[in-house]
Amino acid sequence: QKEVEQDPGPLSVPEGAIVSLNCTYSNSAFQYFMWYRQYSRKGPELLMYTYSSGNKEDGRFTAQVDKSSKYISLFIRDSQPSDSATYLCAMSGSSNTGKLIFGQGTTLQVKP
Amino acid sequence: GAGVSQSPSNKVTEKGKDVELRCDPISGHTALYWYRQSLGQGLEFLIYFQGNSAPDKSGLPSDRFSAERTGGSVSTLTIQRTQQEDSAVYLCASSFIRLDTQYFGPGTRLTVL
Image (cartoon, rainbow over all chains, first blue to last red; front, side, top):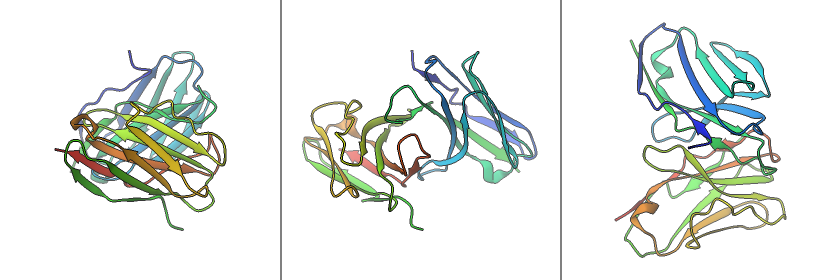
């Protein structure tokens, strides 16, 4: 079993929809939770960074962390075609190096 | 300022050849990471450098893989006697300090024929 599980999709939604992306994890030592967006043939770029449990909002994006359930989510409101990309959850804190443990990534397509 | 840069962007090699992949981190970033992204897989940690400390090599898949970081800046990932299963995108990331935000380069796409 992988430390971080993420449904690879693909997920297809109409423009304007609310998108929900999720990851589950097994290592209770994780403390730092991130969402990265990766466009085709590009490197991942950080979208959201959350420490421990709680919610964080940035524009159309909201990240939620529930450590008791070992479950994290990313919500995208008013989705746009430009949001079409692969979304990767990542976690760290189980080692003192800060290395990230990634989910497999969910491919999202927002149709105009 | 400039982001993380990697070269080459694409590399095609024959099975059994050695390859070198280069990473230029963001200036002033002390932590540097290498990850590998295989088709249909998430990113897999390979190696971590922090300042002058001994690197964390725990993610290197075999002794054919090695990496060095010269002068606390540029890093080179070397794969000896490449195999077809080494085909992947190799991504480099840097951060100001460990546990800080990691910024990724565009990656090197390696194809082993």
